[in-house]
Image: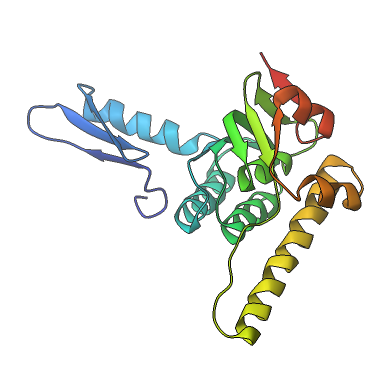
Length: 210
């Protein structure tokens, strides 16, 4: 179980004061062992999935395992991805999206404060009519960032890969937001910051929570 979902671990000592490790934060509690086990089951069976901080391979792997675990154990037919992220790795973000699509469950997405770059992409990738953001959230879209170094051939290969991901992500955003690809390419040429209302008008979200 610990290998499957490492964000919730429990330890006990003779004084019955236990430490719960949730998302790498130690929390002291006087709950009995049986209550901690019930808490663990409740946490693991919960359909809430957190994406807090940067999008990288580690968080993508944790979300992938949590999604598969929830699919196999939960009676819920939906997942809720809570997002407060400045973005990060394109490949890690696509892994998260593919994982959520693979299980064929309704994907509710919620922006809690910031959804930028890949965070905004994942927010928009949720099931239409179930993409939400809190009133004072900020949402930002842009083209993939990257650099190239080495000999001329190596630079060309890396530049082509950046262009590939730019077209892939823009194509998805065009579908998510129901906007022409040409407009998305123009809008993402530079950082495009939006309020929750602007994001709703753009088609990145469907509802503002207030």
